Structures are given as structure tokens and as C-alpha cells.
Image (cartoon, rainbow, N blue to C red; front, side, top):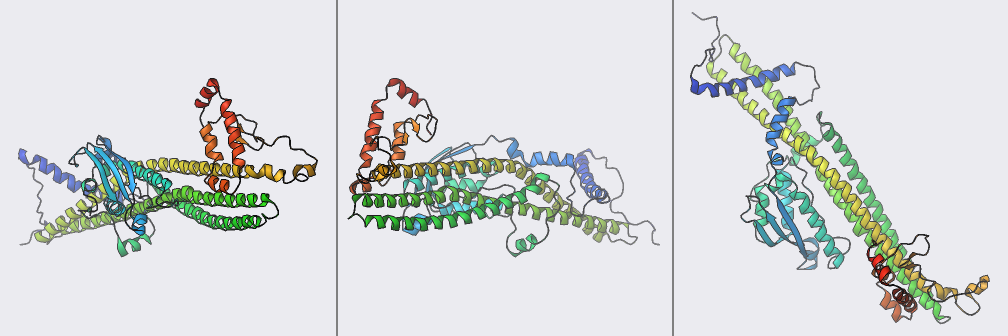
Length: 523
């Protein structure tokens, strides 16, 4: 005779064994998780909303982000040199960075490392690994291999050291990177031998990634991160547009420089009529050279600075895309858990249920619940860490843009002042071209032939009403250019009058004036 009561492999009997009380509580907690999920699914909500409880989210996030709560581990890296060896292509594309390390992280075998040498290819390896492994972090992109200053010169060397120091400072601010074992392998490995020991497992790549990116992103309840991706994408596109305009402007300036050289050469060919034409032509060619330097400085300061922002914003955009992919996986896991729960419930409520099938259904439910719990923890960890790093990146972006514009402006001002100093060297010669020309044609007389042509001195600029004291070195850095020796050899000796004026200004400095100059900042 068949019983009307369905078979229940889990009879509702109280377990009085005190040693199994803890295990029983864990089983009850695991069984209550899908039930709570089922209750939440019955409430009205958006189709793509990730269901999370606020209180449990905060507690689990604190546990997941314990690296930031107990951030006592530190690492200090000081870049000391950048070397370029080998053939020209190797010097250009694969510089060698020399740095010192001091740390208290236990993953390192020593607390200090001196003169560690790493090639740019090795930096690419560690960056690729960290980007794929730590999907919850915005890993800073690497600086460019070379600057527009040109390799094998002081400006490029100093700029590369500053850029890699900036990159190390940003990377070591992330506690997840500091605690990563692979980063310790990178520091401790010998020069030219580093290859990632582990394989990154956190990033979706290939055709699957390209396919999922075509789908609409799921609903994001975190407003800061939901608005951050469009902001980053707009910065990325805007910076690319600025770079294109800078390239067009640079090409136009290079064409203008060629025309200035041709214009100056035309005056030089008229030296048989008057020596002034030759000197004026040489000056025009020097002005063209200064304009060429200004075009190079524009690319080396503004273009290169924007290039780092472009690569950084693209990486952040892809990292936020990875978060969307995790959210989509979590939604699928929640739906799968709900489906497995329904199947397990139906199997248990059947009149002729098979104990093996019921056990299999419950096992599938446990696997689905464990997968959902894993993805929930991963999603909360990514969200919490990206919210923190979002603020840090915006602060870095603001400071980097200001630093880039400041460097661009100072270089621009410096060489525009040098151009003015060059033009002032022939101003007096143009005015007194001959005994009957120059200012006499305008009914004016030349009252002074010395000192009146110098507009930039220790007293400030003559075209302004403000008195801004400058040091002698600052004035000489502006009034002396890279083309002084060439101009002196060609007979342009107005530099002597300028130097004489400056020597007279040096004689006017007493102890009080010298002290005041030393106490005032430079322009």
C-alpha cells in the first residue's frame, strides 16, 4: 500500500547533539539564503537590479576590503636613473629604469633593495598581470617609452625619471598591489628575467568579452560608478581631440619655421648692400629655430601629458566594463539559484519522489548558492574598492592636468621671452640703419644707443607698470639663448651691449638689494 505522505529525507526532528549544534546552524543559514532571495524576487523591482541587503553588504564589504582597513604595510620606491643602451630602436622602445626599494611587506625577502634594474618590457609584463588579476582596482597605465624631447638628452632623461616616479607612487598607494605576490617577484627578479609566475584569472577576454560589450549594461544602483564611466569616456574622447589639434598645430608651426628660415636667408643674400641685412637675416633664422623649439616643447609637455590621461581613461573604462560583466554574471547566478530552488522544492513535494533525484537537486542548489555568494562578494569588493579609487583618480587627474598646463605655460613663456630678447638685439640697428634713415625719417632722434633696448632686467619688464625683482641668473637664462655663439660668429655683437648693461646692473646691487632679491620668489 502506497503512502499518501511524500517521502521526506530530512524529517523535522530536533538534533539534541551539542557537538552538532554549530553545523546545524550553518545548514539552517544556507537553506534560508535562497528562501530570502525568493521573497525579495516577489517584490516589484527593475529587471536588471542586483539584489543585495544594505546591512549585510556593509558588513561583508568591510571583511572583503580588510586590506584598506588595516593598511599598515608600506613600500617606498625611489627612481634614480633611466638608461638607454643597445641599438637606436632598443634605446627608444625599451629603456631601463633603475630604482631603490624600501618596504615592510612580508612577501618580500628583504626590507631594502638597491639599484634594481628593470626594462620597459618587464614593466609591460607586470602591468598586464596586475590589470588582469586585480579587476577591482584601477591599475595606472605605464608612462610612454620616450618623450617628444627626443632620446639621449637631459630633458628626456629628467622627464622619464619623473614619469616613472609618478607611476610607482600611484601603484604603491594601492594596498592590493602592495600585497600581491607577483609584484614582489617583479621587484626581486634579476634584470631581464622576469616573467609572470601566475596567470591572471579575473578578466574576461577574447570573443566572449567583445560579444558581451555589445549588450546594454545592467542597472547600476551605485550612482557614483554609474556616472563615472560616461565621464571617463568623455575625457578620453576630448583628450584625443586635443591631441589631434596639437598635431595639426605642430605641423603648421614646422611649416612656418621653414618659411622663416627662407625669409631670413633672403635677407642674408642682400648683405652686399648693407651689413644690416645679413645680421637681420641671421636673427630671423634664429627666431625660426626658437619657434621650432617651441613646437617641440608643446608636444613634449602638453601632448605627452595628455597621452597619459588618454591611456589611463581607456584602462579605467575597460575596468568599469569588467564590473558590468561581473554584475551580469551575478544576475545570471541569482536566476540560476532561483531555478534550482524551484526544482529542489518540486522534487521534494512529489508523491513518488526519488531520494537520489532529491539529493541531486539539493546538491545543485547548494552549488548554485555558493556560486551566487562568491559573485556577490566579488561584486561588493569591486564596487567598494572602485568607489575609493574613483576619488583618488579624480584627485590625481586634477593635479596632473594642473602640472601639465603649468609646465607647458612656463616653457612657452621662457622661449617667448628668449625670442623677444633676440629681436631686441637688432632693434637699435634697424632704427639707425644709416645716417639719414631710421627714426630721423619720423622726426625723432635716438637719445640713447645703450640700455634702452633691454626690456627684461632685474627690475622687471619694461612694458608693465609692476616692479618684479628677479635674480641675475633668471635674467641671463632668458636673455641668453642656444644660438648666441652662432650669432656672435656672424658678427651680431649687440649681445655685448646687453651684457654691459647687465654688468652695470650688477654693480648697482648692494647688500640690502641682494638680500631682498634672495627673499623674493622668481617669476
